[in-house]
Image (tube, rainbow, N blue to C red; front, side, top):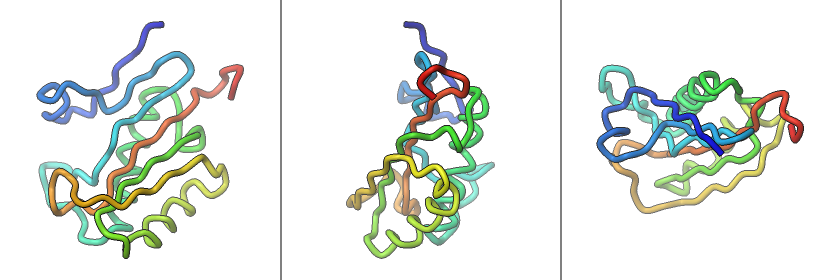
Length: 132
């Protein structure tokens, strides 16, 4: 099986050897995504706004792959603080509640930058595939 790599243009991708997303067969695997801002601006201060920014970045990668948020079948979210669970969950429900993908949310000790409160990864099926 061949795969197609999708880059966000982040300097970390070639440095650390990963892609924003990988299309493999009928699936799109989107890497863990934090609320990285254009031009290196600081991320939003609250977890809900960070989750929305994560989904903007994920949505862009999915679009480049030929899919969209409505094609997501699996989500994993990593939080640095338990008190952000509800806020991030509500953003998830707002954006994905109609499709209700499988989801795991884990509270972890730290992310790569202490300003990041949430990291989200997603898997989607390409539209028009037999299994979709």
